[in-house]
Amino acid sequence: MDDLEHKVKSLDELYEAHEKYLNKALFRFVLTYITTLLADVIPETPNMSIEKFDQ
Image 1 (cartoon, rainbow, N blue to C red):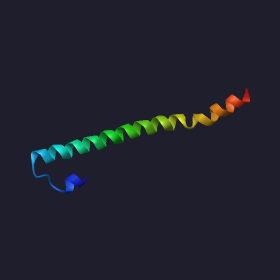
Image 2 (cartoon, rainbow, N blue to C red; image 1 turned 90 degrees about the vertical axis):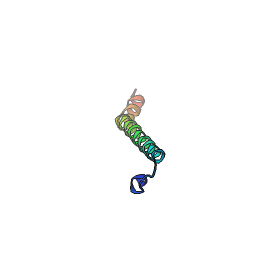
Image 3 (cartoon, one colour; image 1 turned 135 degrees about the horizontal axis):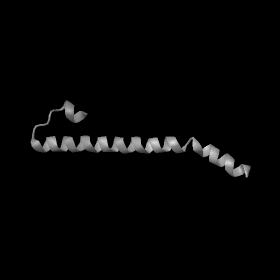
Image 4 (spheres, rainbow, N blue to C red; image 1 turned 45 degrees about the vertical axis):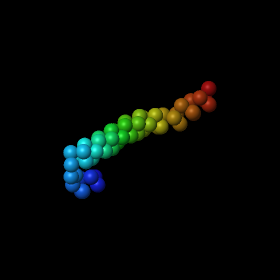
Protein backbone atom coordinates (compact mmCIF):
# COMPACT_ATOMS: atom_id res chain seq x y z
CA MET A 1 0.00 0.00 0.00
CA ASP A 2 2.96 2.28 0.56
CA ASP A 3 3.66 2.20 -3.15
CA LEU A 4 0.20 3.54 -3.89
CA GLU A 5 0.67 6.42 -1.49
CA HIS A 6 4.00 7.40 -3.07
CA LYS A 7 3.39 7.79 -6.75
CA VAL A 8 5.72 5.85 -9.00
CA LYS A 9 7.93 7.92 -11.26
CA SER A 10 8.89 5.46 -13.96
CA LEU A 11 7.75 2.34 -15.71
CA ASP A 12 10.31 0.31 -13.76
CA GLU A 13 8.91 1.59 -10.46
CA LEU A 14 5.39 0.76 -11.63
CA TYR A 15 6.54 -2.77 -12.50
CA GLU A 16 8.17 -3.17 -9.06
CA ALA A 17 5.08 -1.84 -7.27
CA HIS A 18 2.84 -4.21 -9.22
CA GLU A 19 5.16 -7.14 -8.51
CA LYS A 20 5.06 -6.39 -4.76
CA TYR A 21 1.27 -6.14 -4.89
CA LEU A 22 0.94 -9.49 -6.67
CA ASN A 23 3.32 -11.19 -4.23
CA LYS A 24 1.33 -9.87 -1.27
CA ALA A 25 -1.96 -10.95 -2.86
CA LEU A 26 -0.60 -14.43 -3.61
CA PHE A 27 0.75 -14.77 -0.06
CA ARG A 28 -2.63 -13.79 1.39
CA PHE A 29 -4.42 -16.26 -0.88
CA VAL A 30 -2.12 -19.11 0.15
CA LEU A 31 -2.38 -18.14 3.81
CA THR A 32 -6.18 -18.09 3.59
CA TYR A 33 -6.20 -21.48 1.86
CA ILE A 34 -3.95 -23.03 4.52
CA THR A 35 -6.01 -21.47 7.30
CA THR A 36 -9.16 -22.95 5.79
CA LEU A 37 -7.58 -26.40 5.66
CA LEU A 38 -6.43 -26.14 9.26
CA ALA A 39 -9.85 -24.94 10.38
CA ASP A 40 -11.31 -28.13 8.93
CA VAL A 41 -8.69 -30.40 10.53
CA ILE A 42 -8.29 -28.87 14.00
CA PRO A 43 -11.87 -29.52 15.25
CA GLU A 44 -11.53 -33.17 14.21
CA THR A 45 -8.24 -33.68 16.08
CA PRO A 46 -9.69 -34.09 19.62
CA ASN A 47 -12.26 -36.58 18.32
CA MET A 48 -9.54 -38.62 16.65
CA SER A 49 -7.55 -38.72 19.90
CA ILE A 50 -10.55 -39.77 21.99
CA GLU A 51 -11.53 -42.50 19.54
CA LYS A 52 -7.97 -43.82 19.55
CA PHE A 53 -7.93 -44.18 23.35
CA ASP A 54 -11.45 -45.61 23.56
CA GLN A 55 -10.44 -48.75 21.69
